[in-house]
Amino acid sequence: MSENRANMMQFEVDPANPPKLSKAAMRRLVQIQDRAIDYSDIPPLSDKWFEQAEKRAHVSVKRPISLRLDQDIIDYFRKQGRRYQTRINAVLRAYVESQKHA
Image 1 (cartoon, rainbow, N blue to C red):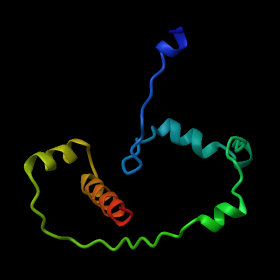
Image 2: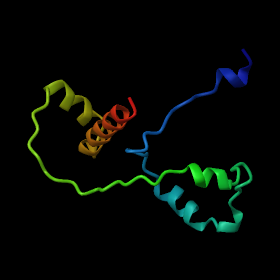
Image 3: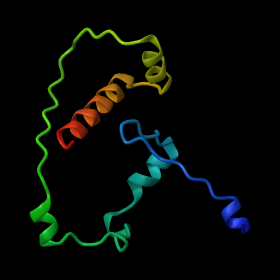
């Protein structure tokens, strides 16, 4: 294995819980001008893509409910940090979507 591959690290970012940027990183990001951003690796969207795209109706009206969950489930989501209820909602939404297409 080459030295470069031995030092590689992979990770995935949870879109529902992105990492916070440091103040320094945020300052650098704000200072980048739009024309300095390199979009060359993003392919253009074709007419076919727009024809096949589906507009997802997502109503984000949330209602408070009382829900009984097993303690280990609560502990798991709380260990993930703040916004654990949002992550529970995302897991439930993914399940519902998968059942619609099953």
